Structures are given as structure tokens and as C-alpha cells.
Amino acid sequence: MFRQFRKEVIKVLGDYGEERFVRESEHADLCSTVAFKLAKEKKRKPSEIAEEIISSLEFSDVEYVGKVEAVNGYINFYANYEFLEDTVNLILDSDENYGSFKMDGAGNVLVEHTSANPDGPLHIGHIRNSIIGDTLARMFRKAGYEVKTHYYVNDMGRQIAIACLGYERFGIDENKKPDHAIVEAYIKMNREIEGKPELEEEVEKLMLDYERGEERAVRLFREVVEHALKGIGETLHRLNISHDEYVWESSFVRNGYVDRVIEMLEKAGMLKEEDGALVINMKRFGYEKDVVVRRKNGTTLYVTRDLAYHLWKNENFENFVNVLGADHKLIGRQLQDVLKALGLKPPEIVFFEFVSLPEGSMSTRKGQFVSADELVEKVCEEARKIVEKREDLNGEEKEEIAEAVAVGALRYDFVRIAPEKPMTFDWSKALDFERQSSAYIQYSHARACSILRKAVKEGMPEIEFSAELCTPEERKLVMLMSKFSWVVEKCIRSLRPNAFADYLMDIAAAFNDFYSKNPVIKAEGEVRMHRLAIVDACRIVLRNGLELLGIRAVEKM
Image 1 (cartoon, rainbow, N blue to C red):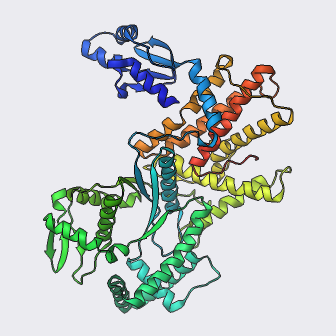
Image 2: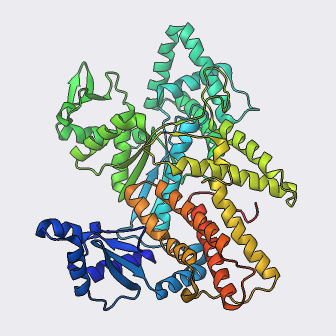
Image 3: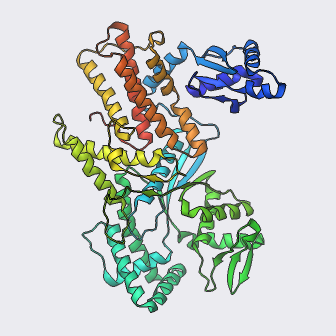
């Protein structure tokens, strides 16, 4: 709805309706700052120009633009009663589909995220990648895109070869979670190699055999990688994350795409030979070091297969987004530059900074990272302690709510910080029901559900929203709810899902402010019906918003 209102404001402004000058404001529903730009050009007061613009505006063929006023050079626009009523009615009628729309230019999009090496469990940095990628995929779907998600499986690296040798030499503990069992074999083999450097030859031979498709190597790699991916998949599933497809790096060697991309590089004159290896001349792009794409022994490197993968992406998708850690900035930018030089579309890349934990908040064994499984279990354990105090819930309800609150705490805190900013995850703050946290939003949804249950129990009449009855708190809440799809669109354009996390928090805060100042159950007649309509609409918006963030909207807390 807000997107429609904004379009009408731009239409009303006519020649003065450049989008860059139309913005949200604390003092109006929308405002235009165009008078300040014209004032500089004409050397006049912005307030005079704003008044002149308002006097020239045409309001034909618009439904939702109400009052317009000039204040100190700003041109302020306010939505009318019809807009407020249509917003609430649309939310109630659309229900679970509220917020869905068809964004201009929406086609198909591939979102590649997580893509951690399958040689052990995910750690806390990986799940920031996963949560950002999964949330963006959900937003693209909400905006009418046809979405696919990929986990790009690095099954050809040295680390995987070491894990394979460890698996073969030491076996694994079948009683442990598969990814944790694989990393133990990897660690043991690494220690073995440190004491016997001659084993490096075995690693190199195994990598060469796998790239050439030798049967034993293919069988071994497949078994180890699939075992690790099974455990990784279990972790992701608990976080409400899934992938449409696991795409193996080696597939681009087998299907000819690696040969094709090397041929394209040769035709473009971008390759040179150095000591028998093929190298991309990166100095032409301003980089100090060149990039090897094929070693002297004929094997390729990660960058070669990645270029091949993106050639495949170009042939199968209109848009593609990669989520990568900040340590991949150099590789990511080199990839983009080479693809552009080949006449191919580069991926849009979301780089994210790393995650840390407060000193002493969790202990880990020396030399080991904090696995995502450890973190999830720790947060769940703390959530159980909080929920356990509730006497009106049975054991099953407590466990379900604790899990939903814990996963919500992780997902919300990992996405609410802009990707380019480093973050510290503190479970005690993430689980604080009074603080700006996922638990606060979930609690707001549960409160709305509780109000409606009580109203039904007391005999709830037909609900009906009336804009003329709106208090300032109610109007503010309805205007916020109207912005759902507008905020989603902004997140997609910027590839920054944190803006939606802020938006949903604003909804929850506005709902609680409304509820504290405006009696609902105790209200009478049409006021009661009107406020119950607002509560039901807010319940829908909070539920749909939590779902967009991959968080379960519980009805009791």
C-alpha cells in the first residue's frame, strides 16, 4: 500500500517528482526536498519555492494523497482516511499473503550462500552467511522472483583430500554427528602430516586422481563429502534454512564448463604461460599478482572452477547473488572483473564481516572454533531456563517455545546488523524479552494472539476498522504496517536485509505503545471493533514478517 501512496505522491509532484527527492520523514508520511535543490539554483528561499510548488500541484487520478503542506521548505504529504482503511482491509483479506508483490523487473534469481568446506561442522561465521542468504532468498520470493538457492560444494580442495585420507586411515565415530566425525578424521590426518611431511605426496596424488575422475578417488571423496554434508544439513535445518540444490565444484570439470571457460580466456587474450602453468594476466585490471587457472600438471584451481560455475549461472539465470565472508573480497572482485572482461554478467556479492562472542561467554577446547551446533544448543539451553518458569504451559509447549525463541534469537541478531559491520553475539541480550530482540517481537505477536483469543471467548463481534476513530498511536501503527512491501523492496535493491529487521522491531514497538495507551478488550461498541481489527492486522504483519526472517511466530509465550 505504501508503495502505491509513494507513486501517487511522485505523480502529484509532476515535474518536481524526482524519486531521489521523495523520502520518508518523522514529521509526515512522505516529504519532498526538491525545493532546497531549486533554491540553490534560483538563489531564493526554499520556503517560497515549496509554497509555489504546492499551489501548482494537480490531484486528479489519485486515491490516497490527503493533506499537503509546506514546512520550512519541505513539502509534506499525508495519506487520507481511505488509505488507512484500505491498508487494514487489505491486510485482513490477504492474511498470509500480505506483503507479497511483483517487483518491477522481477525475474529469476540464484542465491548462493553458506558454501562452507565440507570437512567439518559449520562455525558461527558460516551461519551469518547462511542467515543472510536465506533471508534474502525469502525476500526475493516475497517480491515475486523465481528463486533458487545453491550450496556450492568445494569438494576438490586440499582440505577435503586430507579429510578423505583421515577417513580412510582412521575411520570415523559413527555415534557422532556426521560433520563432527569427519572433522576429527581431518584433524588426526593433519597431525600425521605434520610429523611425516612425505605424506604430502599422497595428498597431491589423491587430488590429482579425483580431478581426473579415477574411480577409487571419486568414490572416497563422494562418501566423505556426503557424510559431512548430512551433518551440515542437520544444523541448517534446525536454523530453518534449506537449499534447493547442492552444486559440486567437480561437476564443472566433468561437464566441460572448465574447458569452455579456459578457451574463452584464451580467445580473449587474457592468458599467458608461466613455467608450464596457465595464468590470467591480472595486472590489466590493476592487481599486483596474476591468477593461476591451470597448474603445470594439468589440474585446475578453485578460481577456474568458480569461473566455470559463473559461466553456467550466466546461461541459466538472469540474476545471481553470492554471500561471501570479508576475507573473500579480493577473490570476489577478481572474479567480477574477469567475468566482465569475458562479456559475462558478474554476480552481485554481499560481503559480511565476522562474528565474535563476548569473552568468557562460551568455552571451547583449545585449538577448536565455536561450532554452530554448540552455539545453537547453548542458546536453546538458556531459552529453556526462561520458558521453564511458565506454569501455564505443558512440557511439550515449553520445549517448542524454547526452540522457537532460541532459533529466533540467533536468526534475528545475525541479520539485524548490516552485513558489512562486524558483530558480537551475546545470547543474554538476544534472549531479553524487554530489549530489542527477536523474543520481543515474538512476544508482541503472542500478545496480539492472546488479545484475540480473549475477545473470541467473550464473544467477539464482526471487526471493522474505521480511520476516523484512529488515535495518533493507531495511525502511526497502520502507516507502519502499510510499508511492508516497500521495506522488502528496499532490502532487495540494497541487498541489506537488516533494514527489515529494524522495520519489524518498529512494528512491535508501535503495537505495544498502541496497546498500552488504547484499551482493546475493555473498549465498547465500534471502538472495540475498530481496535480489534488493528490487533488482528498487526498479528498478521508480525507473523508474516517473522516468517520472512525465518523465525517462528509462536502464539503463546
